[in-house]
Image (spheres, rainbow, N blue to C red):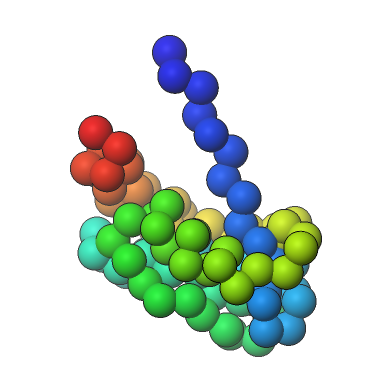
Length: 87
């Protein structure tokens, strides 16, 4: 069995908040948003790419609290998208 790689999502590059949200509205739109200031990164259909887009403007500390709206409201899409993008 393949070991799952831990996701690291950095704190907000705009305000420094360590609470961020992973948001998905459909299978083609996933993005990261700061829970405090509302700063966002571009959306992407891949959760992994959306996180990379957020992290490219990183501060040196990882977020300590991730509100995973993606998995809460769209668990079936999350697993479908992972299968589609990680084969």
